Image (cartoon, rainbow, N blue to C red; front, side, top):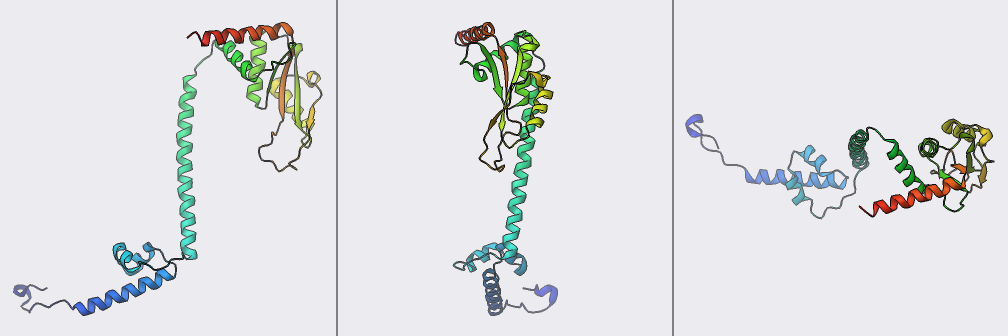
Length: 239
């Protein structure tokens, strides 16, 4: 409505019939676009109408998203997933780095206790003449050797390695790998044991370098380690 004092003209009443016709036309366009698979955002942008109006106009209108909408949603999910993945990486790296800094040094006694717990969980307990650690993790095998050498004072020539691998893996390459990791020459390796593979090379979590066992034939050491384990258990439950 114009201000009469400013314009000198009479007020002009809105043409409600025209507005209603325009609204009907917009609604029909919205229905048409919705049937074509356009999203609410697309329709609102094209027609310059609010989503509130669309929600009223499009009640009961079936919706099959267009290829464009499907592709955009797909890209949106990928982007959202990547953002979540990146946040997880950032968070877990921060936690890991903080925890890493908590371990600044280890005493000889702490190394001894860690090895005792490791043998309690991972060591062989079936033959009283055989001390044996078995694992597929090279770092754990290196640790077990450090413990046997520095804590148990096992002579180097008594430490031997036994490997178990799938029969379709490269035996020579794997033996060289473990020899380099352990610092033990192949002359102190037992004959490698093969396990028949039924995966035809397609198994994703197959052990690339097999399983290594660090062995020491020493009855006295076996019973000493058993005593250490009992002592640790006693102290744990005395706290």
